[in-house]
Length: 354
Image (cartoon, rainbow, N blue to C red; front, top):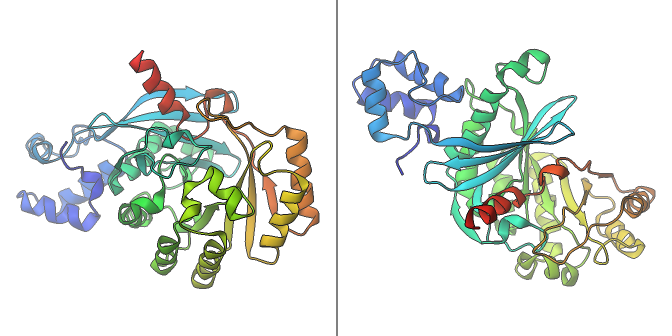
C-alpha cells in the first residue's frame, strides 16, 4: 500500500509539488481536489504527467464505499474499503441543524467492551490521519447537492463529526491529533473543533494530553456503570483506570478547555439500569459540568447482553432529571441497518466467509 495524499497538510503538498518540478499554484489545485473527495485521476485541473507522477508515489483512490445502507429514518451507513482491503464503518445522521458523520479511527478495536461489535476480532491496525479524514471527504462529495438545501455551508454537507466509529480514538492518539489539525485547517474541510465529539473508554493519561492540546472539542467518556466492579464486567479497561481517576481527568479537561464533558451510559437490562443505579449515578456526577447521554443497547448476537425496554429507559431518565442531572435518552438511529458500531462490518465479513 502506497502513501496517501490526504495525510499531507497544505504546506506539505506545496513542498511535494515543488519537489516534482511543478509550479507552486498547482499545490492549491491539488489541495482543492483532495478536499473535494476526488481521486488523483479525478482532479481535472492537473496535467496528465503530474497526475502520473503522483500515482507513482501515492494511492489514486485511498478509500471507496464498498456498500451503502439506507435506514427508514434517513440515516445512511457506509462500509468503507481502504487501499489495502481493510474495512471500517461510517454513519451519516441527518438532523435539522445539519449532517453529523460518525467516523472510525481504527480497523477493529482492542479495548474489548462487551457491548461493542467492533472489538470482536480485536485490533487489525490503526488508521492514518488521512484515512480518517477521507471518510468525511467521500461523504461530503456524495452529498454535495445537499449543501443547497441547507445541510451545510462552504461546499460541505457534513457539519459535525463524532469520533465514535470502530476503534478507540485515544489508542491511536497521534494520528487522531493530526486528523484534528487537518480537519480544522482553513481552506480545507474547516470544521470547528467545537463541532467534533471524541468518545473514549477512558484512557486517563491520554485524556490529560488531549486537554493540553488546546482543541475545544466535546470529550465524551463511555461510563456505563456507577462503580468499578460493575464497569469491569463490561469494560476491561476499567481494570486499568478507575472511575475516580476518570472523573479527575474530566475535571482537568474542563479546567483547560472550558468545555463541559459528556458521559455515555448504555442501558443494559439486568446490569446497570434499576433505580438504585440511577441514584448512584446522581451521587457520582451531580454538580459536575457534565451531561449524561443514555443509550439504548444495540444487541450484538455474539454477546449475552439485552436491551432495556423503552418504558424502563424513560423511567431511568426521569430519576436522573429529578435528581438534578443534565441527561437525555439518545434517539435510536439506523437500527434497521445495524446502526451500532461494528455490526455492519461483522455481518459483511461473516457473509464473505460463508
